Length: 238
Ligand code: G3H
Figure 1 (cartoon, rainbow, N blue to C red):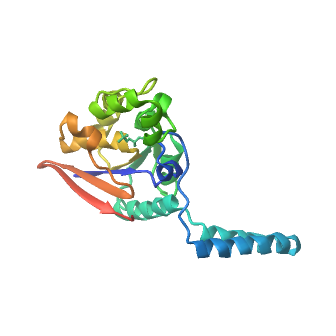
Figure 2 (figure 1 turned 45 degrees about the vertical axis):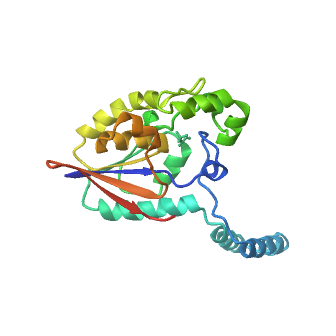
């Protein structure tokens, strides 16, 4: 049996701010106040010091600052790359599929040795006029829309955007291609899209799709064998 590995992108800056849609990069780790003060003092020192130092020293300093401000989403990307490289070591024909949005492409970037394919059909549900808003903002500024979605999340279509049913429909070619593959595939995508893909393989009813939990920083491995579909989950970090 060949595995299909499903995962969301590493946590993005919009995830942290609770904003939907968008095309942001991965989130900066919350650093402790103490670390922040240290890095701030270091940058102050550096602004005087760097005027007198060589390019190498300059680089070393930049490296040190970067280490203080590690990117949590990027930590996941590295952990995912380690996992994939170990798990698919002997699978020469495996491939990595992402959406066309930055956060999935960046999450895939540390994975080496496998071809990468970008699918527009794997992009997150299009939130139309609500793109970039928080749920609180939608509730406050567009209460009818908020209520309509709450009542029927599966069929609700964002003004100038999509519904879950639209997403399910646009995923059809992806599913056909996934079924056709003989080698493992790693799909790095988004919550709404992965809900629909997962539901297809796990045979979950349509009405459940918008509510299925697809946590961040977790790989869902689907094995398609003669005896049916088996599932394993790997939580790589919080
Ligand atoms: O931005 C969209 C989210 O990933 C989808 O979540 O359908 O539960 O609002 P939601």
